[in-house]
Length: 97
Image 1 (tube, rainbow, N blue to C red):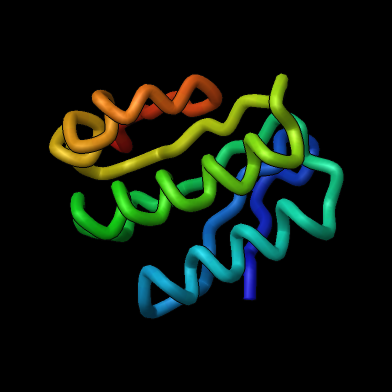
Image 2 (image 1 turned 90 degrees about the vertical axis):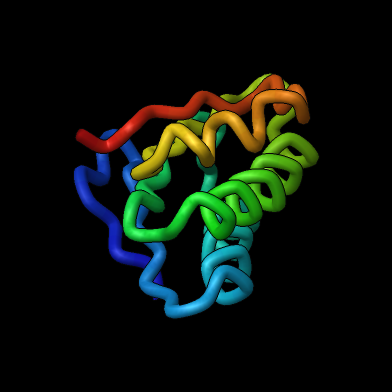
């Protein structure tokens, strides 16, 4: 259910219609594949769904890789603003321009 682009950089685009399915797909990837540093493109989602997915999956990623980083590509600055107060130390957000 995941489409992998640029495998050397581990850029993932979840092929999911709902935020819950996206969380399930990304968490499955985190669990099954060594991905201490990971980039996930969720720029096709709205701000609320992006904030939800990135928060849930960043938490799962941190549990497995406390020193790892996860980069989120989002479509809206609102998604970044919604998550900045959660202090997800393993997450970086980038706007898809």
